Length: 218
Image (cartoon, rainbow, N blue to C red):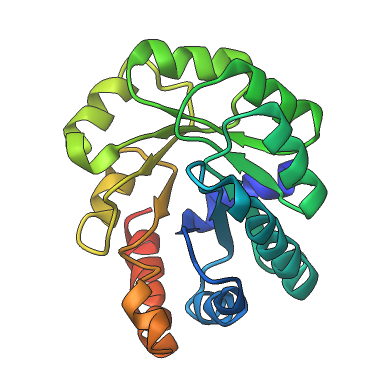
C-alpha cells in the first residue's frame, strides 16, 4: 500500500488540507473534492486542543470507510509517535508534520505508512530524508517562493519535495514548474465560508481548476 500512496501523490500531486472542520461536514467536503478530481485529503490534529483529537480521528475513520482507496486520507500536524499510532489505527494512509522529527518519521515507516515531514533549511531537509521521509514538505513554501525551491533542489535533487503553505490557484503551477512533486493546499481550497453555506459546487470547481493547472504544468 505504501507504494500505491507514493505513486498517487506523484501522479495526482494535490493534497487537500482540512483544519478545524466540523466532523459533520467532512463527508460532503470530501464528496465535493473528489468530484473536482482531488484524491488525497489530510485531516489535521489541532495541537492546542487535545480534546479535539477524537473528532479528528473520527473524521479519518469515516473517510476511510466511505471512500476506501478512492480518496487516500492522511493525518496532519502529527507531532508525536503516539499520534502516529492513533492516526494509523484510525485508518490514515500517510502522516504529515510541520517539522522534522526523526522519531515520528521512523515510527511512521515502521507502521507501514508514508512519511511527509516538514522542513525548511537544507539541514532539516537532509535530516528528514536520512531519517526515512518519503517526501519532504517544504514549509512555508509561498513565503519564500519558487526561487527558494529551485535553489534548495539544486544540491538536493535526490529528495522528493512537496510545496505547502500559501499554495493557491495562482501559484500552484509555478511550484510544480519549479520542481515540487506535489502540493498541499489548505484554506485556499477548503474554504470555510463556502462550507458553512454549503457551496460545495464552488469547492468542486476550484478543485477542478487546480487539478487542471497542475496537470498542464507537470
